[in-house]
View 1: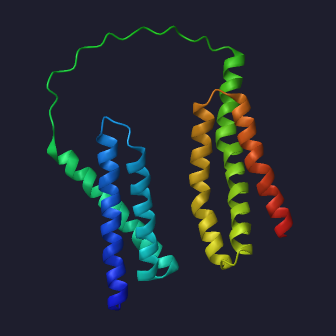
View 2 (view 1 turned 180 degrees about the vertical axis):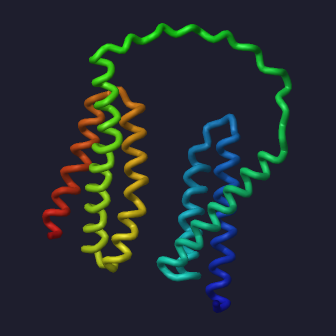
View 3 (view 1 turned 30 degrees about the vertical axis):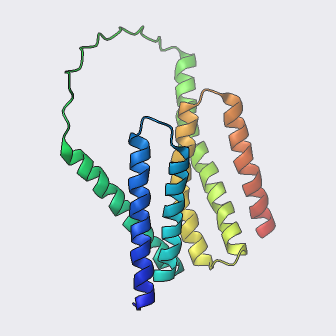
Length: 194
């Protein structure tokens, strides 16, 4: 490692640490600090760019992300070790008795359909989007193996995100627009790419 690369790594580490600490301060603040949050994310992005100068395109970004994660975990561990006790003990909460839901065939079919959608439907949609992104990366000049690694890295993240959105959102129009908005461009990119 040359001095030039070392300096970029040190500055990148400092910027990502500053970004993590600033995000923590903005999160703990009672006021809305949108400008601080954007500035911190910009500092983290600049840190990753400096890490690319330090370690190369792939390895540098990976090292920068690892440093960022270690800094964030260190800050979380430090805050957890302070062990602040609440000033007052929490008040006991009376729990409401919920009405039991009758399990008829409609409720069972709805639950089975939701389980199939989350397991198979969201998985297939996430795979389609990941392969579409693979084609985009591959056509933009990224080596085929690197594009495949990126796509396979994004696949479980997309699957988890789509599943979470499907389970938490009650808006059927949003779900339909989301599915079509992801599936149609991905399918078109795959068809054009081949």
